[in-house]
Figure 1 (tube, chains in turn green, brown):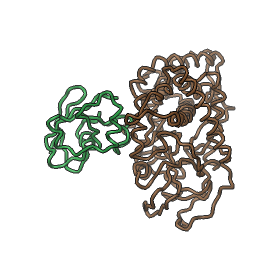
Figure 2 (cartoon, rainbow over the protein chains, first blue to last red):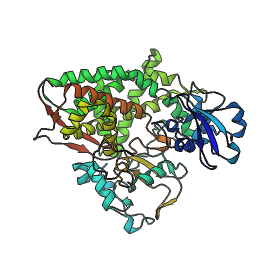
Figure 3 (tube, each protein chain N blue to C red):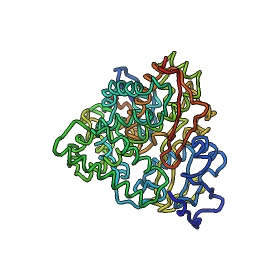
Figure 4 (cartoon, one colour):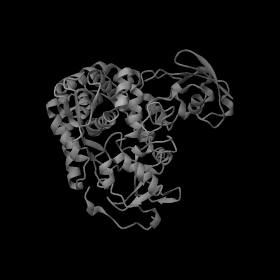
Length: 106
Length: 404
């Protein structure tokens, strides 16, 4: 499966991914390393730095957000309705072709 | 902590899992704690139990530490002190476990992020030069307090709007707090710190400012405004984190640099490599050990940890793990890949890490512009503190009087 990502520079990339991976892990392995901040908690939904915007039309394909993820996004002034923390989006077959944009560094 | 807290080996600990180590008073650690932990990594059992200081596990390998710190199901942050302090005082967000923890962390992170640090940089540069001004003419100083601590601590005190004249008083408190003292004294110092913060909150209530406490007083978690008790509890953590951790990391890095003349010359010629110097120094010379209490029995690599057991994750040892960094004792700013856990990992990854890195970078840049060559005098004696937050309490340096 593939994920289409727009980097902070505006550059677009198609990233190879596999079901079961987290969206963050797939992005990092596929050359979108900027999603992994210096202040990262290591991908356990505790720091809020791996913030991405998911294409509106892809939102229904994503699993629901936990209250922990919601808490971390709560304080961000760059949060939008389509904000997610990429560590907390487990990929599944139905997400092929997902389009995401890395949010600004915070 | 005092020696009388040695216990008998608990039954669930096998005899071959015991290794005698006093994390506060071990001779080798007091000689050089980083060399000491690297040696322990090679000679002690992979995960071991020491009966000193109330009894606790010690974990020193990168992967094991990382898996423990990311495992909130079995390991809790409710008790962070060895021996157990049984304190009722809570540090927000450090003492909380997920999922309760996230909202409190986010409320603090919002104010100590990269934007904040970038905006602070001119102030960092100015402050570094003011402190260098104070010592440069003499051609010598004890780096630990005059610079290593004075720089990050005064920056911290400024953005907390703490009066600078209380520097010595506050430093005295944290020095004692992280030294081997009785639990009664430990709790007494907590009360002292909390009353300092309480006074500050009362003062801000009367006259709000732009400082971090004032900002936290306006902050909320999930839409509910923070209570004064909660702000106090953040303040307690900030006091300890702000007054003693970068200070130690900076002094450790200058201890290395003072003994590495070729590296001094290289960084003077090419200051763009200073961030690599900072990162390599963090890898080699960590400061804080992170403690967890087992909240649910768990087996790790043949070791049975029981509910209530204390676990010390030796973060400074993680960067010295040869399974992660080949030839780990070699200080090499050119490493193609470098891994360490100095700022921890998981839910409690240090929020101040961007600030800490920026402070170390800026200070080193400014210092080398003015004092490009320096060393430890032959008569110089290094005085270390081991324990859970390690420091180098004296680092005498000398250079050509007046700098370059």
